[in-house]
Image (cartoon, rainbow, N blue to C red; front, side, top):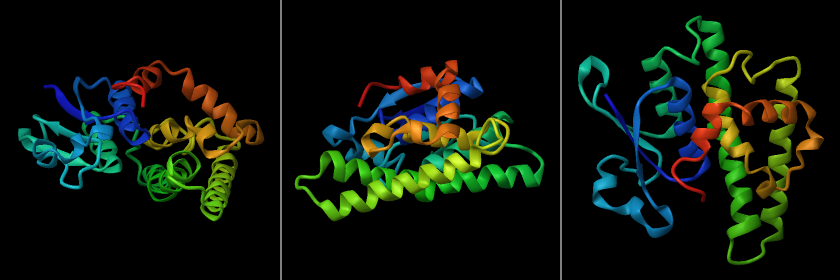
Length: 208
């Protein structure tokens, strides 16, 4: 059965479209234009009460009953469990993936998002905020670069952690980050960018 994906062209939204493409799960896109305030429409709030994309509705959820989910990390875990892909069965390896997924959710996404805001979208120039979040972005890229040394992907094998990190890293120019300063990251980013499912997922639903 087809999963309904409520999304827009943001890093968090594209995590899920990448995952759906990689897992080869059938899905239908329901664009939610957040620039026009569509995330506050009652119909969308019934799916995502926090008025944030992405959200999914799977008519074939656990026990064959429909399930609605919001929060990109929770959706990634759900899809990985449903498909049996990109989320290891062995506990130690699974925890490795989970900790890097949480790293993205708790730091790499929020801090880079603040860099986006103050460097590109804030209505006034706030030098302290720009310096703080640009510097924190650089620190996080350094953490990622170190983790990738000697590994093809962030947790060893390709996983939902890589899918979560990539769409944020794809906007490195918004964060004032020069990829060539992070050679392991640059190698990983090139590999990720060439994956067919990543290319397709990044095109959903439209450029933002």
